[in-house]
Length: 198
Image (cartoon, rainbow, N blue to C red; front, side, top):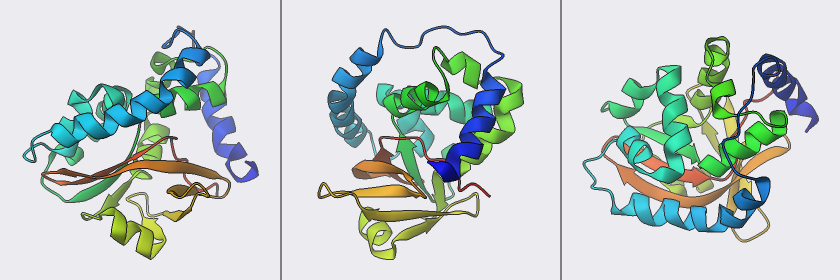
């Protein structure tokens, strides 16, 4: 994880001075519920009316509640609710919990959503969004995605018969694909992506 040590170090240093609460009962509960959560993200999102925007889907699906909060905090809610066609690689709640665990013990969502982190979080979120409506077949065939951060995320086989997206040595499994919204398409991932370390 050498390439991302700098980004994780920046995130960690920003968060360490903030007081902490727990956003989950235990890491064990997160691990036990991970498989069920992935299934819920697929089934629940698939039921949503095609007139819903990307933000509508994230806001009304409990598996994406943290993503929705971070999007609103970063001021990207209008972009994800507008008519411009976008492709979003959406981390589940478990993915955000795991990121907080990577950053340090006992960090919570409240620690993340502080004004000093806004610019950094916006960059991280933009790395999860690509222009245009790109279904999984196109994403896999191209092997890379040029994100709104103007940095590439790379797509490759994950060794388990599926695909993953990321860069360097930090990749997320794509656990559900082609969830259609009025203004684009969502692919569900199990890890928060970090932009390439420059």
